[in-house]
Length: 537
Image (tube, rainbow, N blue to C red; front, top):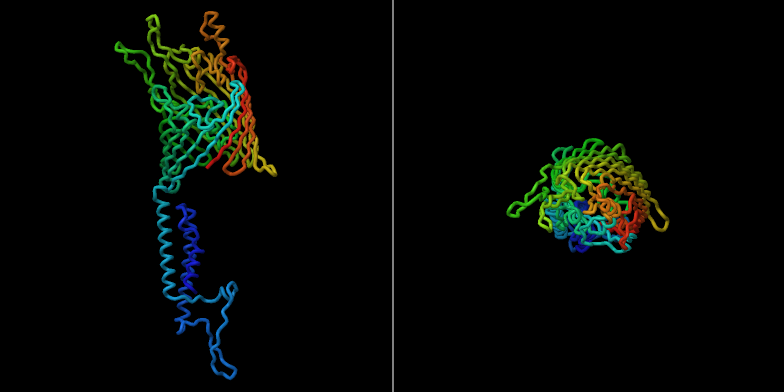
């Protein structure tokens, strides 16, 4: 066997070794290939030992035969043709130098495999994963008479037609070790439409354009208990933030305006059998720091403040009845900070009292917050059903300074199917109802302006009711808030494993004329059409 044939054997056995990444599956494959090569080397060495030294003169392939009269005669044995069974079964004859060179190559490859394996287990990239998606979106809004692509639009206002879509989502996770007891740290970034830029505020209620969306450390304590600390999303509802995990383009009304938001704090997860519990003690929702309200100023002009020192407690339980059905629920209790204007003086120099709440009619800078919900998810190969019911209340948070109260329901059905030439597709239908009429509306995630309304999302009292109340000597406290509904119809297409294309028509309506139109008038309804391309990686 020529030396170059040995080199070809090594090249065929370990293709692309120099380009191999240090992943566990590739390392396992390299180990298998290396073991097979070692067996071949051992077989060659054994065959060489059995064949003995090569004949003098370097000739090979000769045989000693007896002539017809018994006289020994040496005849050249015919060499078998390559590719024949005889060629494959024939012993290989190589020199000791060739065998030593082959052993050295195997040893070098073993060293490379060991180095890759060590890097995969203990190196800086061990246990690191980076996933995410991009979801450029196009939205037509009838009330605003606008149509635009939404992607990387750095906008802090959170609206149902411009919420968490149209952004880059990046999930960076590092696991320290292997197995179920390995701790981990996970960070998600959304630089334009995530929690940090739309919802998270500091102690004074200011949003700081933070690209951080979530940041969580998980430390398993036992096989059942895991300690959790950091910035986490809400436990409420069946819907998630990520576009590539949603079967609609826009979020439901409960996700946007009823369910609590994200928290900063510490908690624990407990899992046993079919049951899973989550517990978390944190700042009030949306706060990266304890809230501080300015009530007045002292004689030197410095603020007199009140802080919200009461933490928020939230928990969730899920029961997995079988592989198809999951039933869950969550609740939240704490104290929330209201919009406030500190005491001061008016243009005439007269003192003005501190004002709290959206209408300035509240009696405190804070209000006790309670929220509870139950949800269900039913899943088969092609069918997904979701349902959720919510109830929430918050003291002093309504427009008239009373208790805000809201409740709602969301129902969603998704059906997947295949078309012969197009491939995998699906359709989704969703209906939402959210009542928020008590005391003029407000509370939860519903943020009303100084006139008691949110004309872009369709909440609060109507402008006409406020004008009539003022004309009659009132301040709008006799007006009711709007109840909201929507229906969304989506068509989905999955051309590849990484790409999802969505098209949605959504109709929203309210019990009052609270949707602002581009001509300055108000309507009871609005329509959206949107399409979205999601590329996951």
